[in-house]
Length: 152
Image 1 (cartoon, one colour):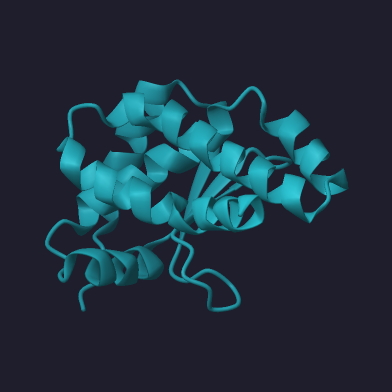
Image 2: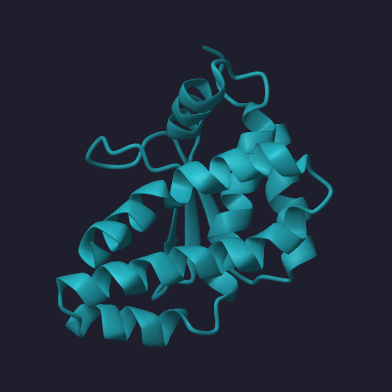
């Protein structure tokens, strides 16, 4: 599989940083440490986003059956991570999460992810809504399942 072209990736990063007005640093790596399928990660303390291109390719392949839309997929994941960076509630939610019991912790984790999506969607409103929705729903599925499990 071809490596994602740096020029295309850098163009997407620049475009979304401009749209979002974010001052977050964005770094590009190939794989998330530890082997988990995480396409992007926002670090609150460092105000830095790390995007994992090989994982994004794997996720795109798994979800859509090809890498035809991998750059669009990258853009959606980056918008989500920028949504974390823009979340004015993230610091307080993170502190609350540190002290929460398991049930409350799952609710807070879901809220954090939903906030990131809500913030990030406005920067990719020119993209195909159905494509975004598939990624968003897949992203939130485990969080929602955890909360529903605890509610049952």
